[in-house]
Length: 184
Image (cartoon, rainbow, N blue to C red; front, top):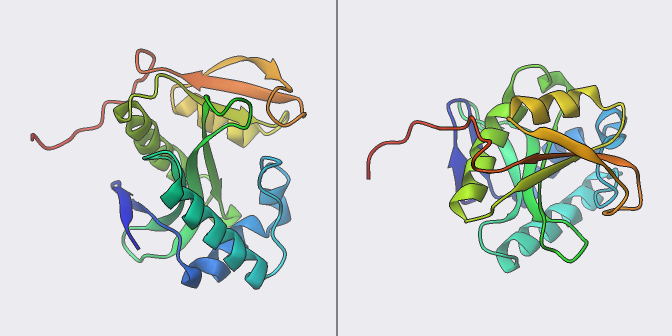
């Protein structure tokens, strides 16, 4: 499993078949699935989850360099607590969306913001000039996470999935994200 990013408390890495049970504990939960993008259905069963992980891993390998779907694991234990992604949105595949999903027992710990900040910085390092988050109406946690990432609300749209969604955006000039990196 290749590691994509390492934060203070998290490792963002490729999905593996062995992650199916942990991923199901995220994507199979009704309280998570209700907010998922229509591109990600609630997964029912470990085999279906394993198939989804394989699909994401393949799409990440074959997709546009630097974008993909990844596992979010605790750095200290390696336990998978959720997933995160940078992926092209379906219309004209020009806009890049950031996504994050965590198991409910890990909500409120700042993991989504921590992973999100590093993924936004990764996107900017790939010369992506803006990153979007699409949040379903009434998803207060999703909106709060987008705002904590420094994203601003730019309106509502049904452009991407035929659903009314709130659109948040961040550009490099907006970013309060300036992670400390070692020189070189």
